[in-house]
Image 1 (cartoon, rainbow, N blue to C red):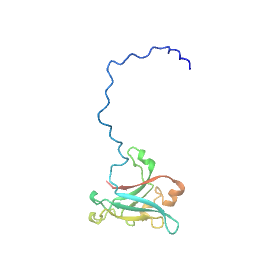
Image 2: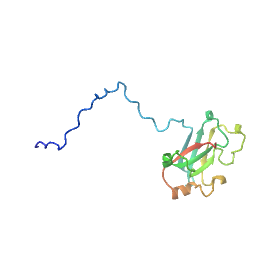
Image 3: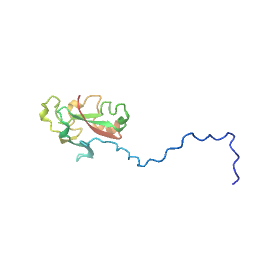
Image 4: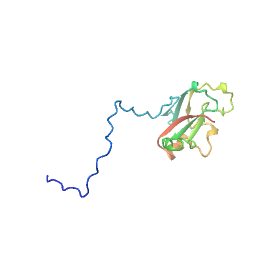
Length: 153
C-alpha cells in the first residue's frame, strides 16, 4: 500500500505536563442495581382457573412495619423518573390485602406475610379508575413491572 500524503495542518504540540502513571489499585467493581435489602418478592403465575395472579411475599420486621404499608406494581420504566417511581402505581394493595388496615394499631403489623393479588379478590379500595386490575394491565399496558413495598409518610 502506498504511503499516505502528509496532513495539511501540523499536529498538536506536546502537553506541558507528563501523563499520570497508572493507578496501583484496580478500580472498584460497578455497584449492583440495588443495594437495599430484598424485603418483598412477587411471582406471576397462572392459577388453576387460568387467571394470571401475582404471589407476594414480604419480610421486613426490622424496618418497623406499619399497618398502612402497601405494595405497588410499577412499570419498570418508572425507575427513570425524577425521583424514581414517583407516579401512582398501576395497581396497589395494603400489606394486609383484603382490608383497609391503614388506621389499625401499629402493633398489628409484623412485617412478615404473603398474599396473592387476584382480580377475583382484588379489594374494592384499589379499584378506582386510575388503577388497573391484572387483566387490564395484560391487555392495555403489558410489559415489565416491578413490585415495591411503600410507606405512607
